[in-house]
Image 1: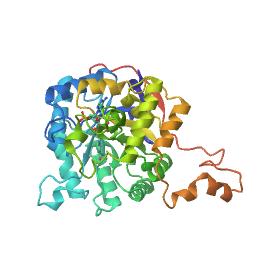
Image 2: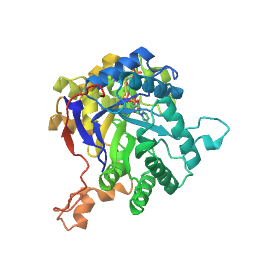
Image 3: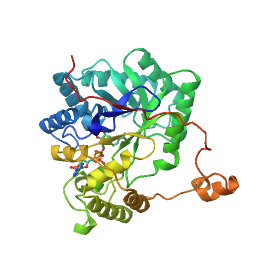
Image 4: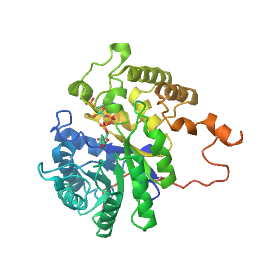
Amino acid sequence: MPLDQYYTLGRSGLRVSRLALGTMTFGEDWGWGAAEDTARAMFDRYLEAGGNFIDTADLYTEGSSERLLGRFIEQSGTRDRVVLATKFTYNAQPGDPNAGGNGRKNIMRAVEGSLRRLRTDYIDLYLLHTWDRLTPAEEVVRTLDDLVRAGKIRYAGLSDVPAWYAARAQTFAEAHALSPLVGLQLEYSLAERNIEHEFVPLALELGMGITAWSPLAMGLLSGKYRPSEGGGTGEGRLAKIGDLPGFRRFTERNWGIVAALEEVAGAIGRPMAQVALNWVATRPAVGSVIVGATKLAQLDDNLAALSFEIPAELRAKLDAASAPETPFPYWFFGDAQQTRIHGGAAVGSKPAGYAPPVWVGRVEARAFKADR
Ligand SMILES: NC(=O)c1ccc[n+]([C@@H]2O[C@H](COP(=O)([O-])OP(=O)(O)OC[C@H]3O[C@@H](n4cnc5c(N)ncnc54)[C@H](OP(=O)(O)O)[C@@H]3O)[C@@H](O)[C@H]2O)c1
């Protein structure tokens, strides 16, 4: 069962399932989530399948996601087994600038709120949600290190930040022997591959495990929006939200990717969602893929995404159809320029003999049982 094979997250001893359960859809407050009974059924199913890694944020469904999750974990008695990740950054009290952002004052406020809603006295992985353009990386790293030492969090990480900011934070943590940032949570899917330029090499070089969000591009790659069947119709988040910034997925380029995915999924005999998730989970630097669902049947479909392999020639089709553009300066780092630099000798990313940091220890483990 692929869900009870664990990867270590970044350069750490934290073992996480290769598919994490996303809970942005737990609660109906945003108009496209799941009611409590469905959310509970999805939580139970994920744990039964052997999964251990659950992602939420104080922002999600206005706090309902954390509240529901806290209740489910407490009632199922699974707190110790679950690797619980949540995030801070977004403002909780409009009008008060220090009730949001990544400064020490807000982080200290936010962690107490999350602990209360999650009904626990520690968070396993605490993530900065989004760069606030103000707070020095050093302040964030020191504050997260204080939370580790205080026992309120076990590990720290970053989401949605510039690569230079993540590199500065991690280098500062290393130089001062502070808790490292072991996770980097970023959008990654066949329809959104821009992290490959900076973040994938960063994650491999600095020991940060990537956890991929919106791996189905918010449902676009799930199989219910198909050019072969008339395109962007169908019920779901994208159809409900429409053409808002951040949710704009119905583009010509994306329809080309969906068409290639449909063809490959047909050739393998697997649902499109499974093939799209499998592709992300098997990319370099990806520690775990955060799956989202609004219905139990969707989750069941998605949890089978690691039980097959995409043959090389079909993977090449997906890679080609979804290839991101290569802006400056990245084309300098491609094979053509590198061959000139190295006198024709080496085009790999590291010379032979170099030992890359170990970040994907794979451990077989037994399925979940209730906590003792
Ligand atoms: N750090 C960040 O900034 C950030 C941002 C976004 C998300 N996240 C995390 O990543 C998680 C996943 O994000 P996401 O929900 O956007 O992921 P996604 O996999 O791209 O989209 C999930 C949505 O697609 C549809 N879907 C999923 N499986 C399906 C299937 N088998 N058949 C048909 N439709 C299917 C469902 O929506 P409909 O039923 O409505 O179509 C589901 O809610 C979130 O829960 C959250 O934990 C983090």
